[in-house]
Each structure stands twice: as C-alpha cells, then as structure tokens.
Picture 1 (cartoon, rainbow, N blue to C red):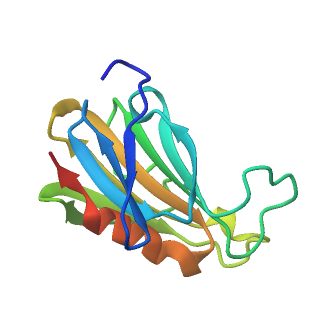
Picture 2: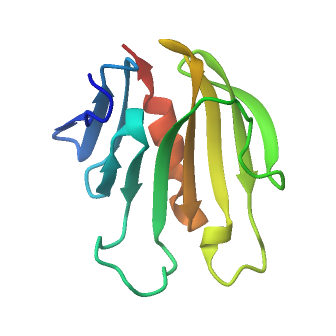
Length: 150
C-alpha cells in the first residue's frame, strides 16, 4: 500500500463491515450502518460517524464519531483530564482513556480512547477514539474487541 492509499472495506451479512489495512497489517469490524469519512489511516485518519454526512447543524444526542489515527509520538491519552487504565488490544499492551464532562452542553466533550503500538510498525502508534453520546460507546468497545493483526 502506498502512502495515502485507502484501506479495503468489505461488508459481512451480519450487518458489519471489515476494514483491512495491508500496510499496517490490521483489520477491525464496525457497523455497516455507520458512514465512512476519511479512509486513509496511513496518511491521516480513518473516520466513522453515525450522522448524515451533510449535517450542518449542531451535533445532537445519539451522534458519534470514531477516529483511528496514526501518530509518531506515543501518548497514553491525548487529553490530560482523562482517566487512564492499562489494557490490551489484540494481544498488544494498550492504554484506555475516558473523559466525561457532566455539565457539557453536548456530548462531544466526552470520549473514550485506546492507544497502542502497531506491531508491524514499531515506531508508530494508533489512537482509536469515539466522541459523542456515551450510549454508543459500546460500538468502540466492539471495534476494539474485533481488532486483528494480519
């Protein structure tokens, strides 16, 4: 895969899709009903969202965005206010961080994020984050559980 080449996406009959990136030798599944934004994990991010792509109004309850981002400098969390715990993702040591702002006007001040090294690229790290309505955070947890190294 050359830099900026999109990952492959295949649909399953069970209502999920599988994202596969051959450069980083990884795959994970996500709900097929979610929209794909950017699909260039090796040159930016891979984004999923559960609201209309042309949404111009303020985000509403029930709306979420998931971003999968490659970074070169490891940080257990991108927000110092988050609670961080150690865990594993597909057999790799990882950090899970969570921040919920109780008095936020919208849910996008809250997030759950995972950070871990990519075994096929030991100098690169992956951050996988969901922001928005906490009611949809299980979507991220299922995505993380589906992670596989190829």
